[in-house]
Amino acid sequence: MRPGLRPRLLQYRPLRFPFLVAERAIAPLDFSGLASHPERIVKHLLAAHHDGHQFAYDLQILSAHPGRLEEVLRLADEVLSSDTKRSRWLRDLVVFEGYHENLYREVKRAIEGDYELPPEEANDPDISFTAYLGWCAAQPKTPSESLRALFRGDLSLAVRERGGETKP
Image 1: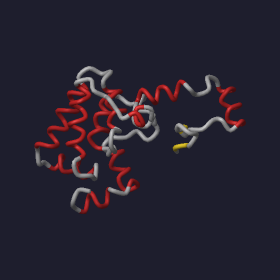
Image 2: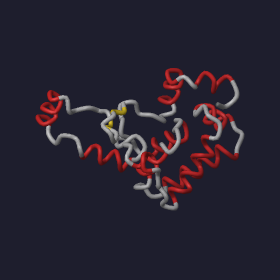
Image 3: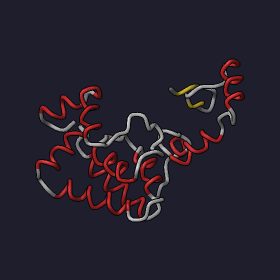
Image 4: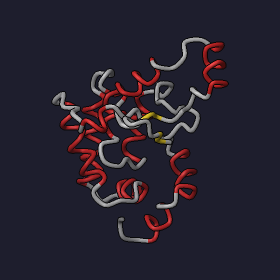
């Protein structure tokens, strides 16, 4: 965690939430990111903490928009290379030390076309946008099929892991 009072307070998601909304870094009703303009996804990457390889999902979406990955790289570099009120705010808002360094490194990889994820993450729809699209494709095709699956107990928003365990 970054030192200071702000990061210590912002580590709690309910306290961080209104600031992320005000920054337009999250769209609370857009769970997939597909309804978000690329500009919002750029803001999301700069201001909303991502663990591990969770950058991949947003970077895969942004790669469909020419110049947006380079924009994220430039803006992450600005946060890292300047000591302004804005850069300090963004560093504190993501709470954890090293976040923007990791973002910069992952965006560079994405620009080079390297989205490789460990196998257990490559199939996780919370980490990989392509895995999310696969999850969507596996859902019932019609409302009536969805209703039947719901009554059978086969419909869930959880991801089924190998071995039958459910991940919320």
